[in-house]
View: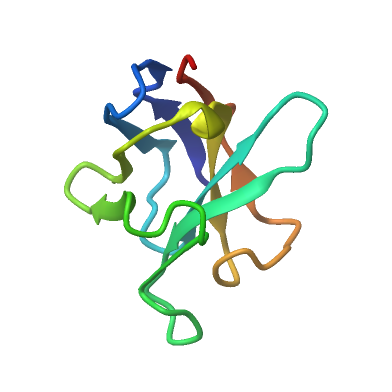
Length: 124
């Protein structure tokens, strides 16, 4: 079992950058694919980026809307997955959360774990 804590969100001007962190406060991320998702109030959750060591997944994958602007990476030493976000715009304003997927990126499983999220706001 793993417990996830996100951090790094905030208010950033258009064109700016942020780095989000997803850290395991309990357990290790090593046995999971870790994905970042984002959601606006009343809207469907959107997959953003995922990192995995499973042979069933590409090492990383990105939503078209963030490809080339966002980078996902992992640091096993600190048990953390990062989401580097660049060239942010108003359309990137969401609650960003990370999920630990036991069966590969984005694969639904009752054993998947979720953090509570960190808010990113980009004014117009």
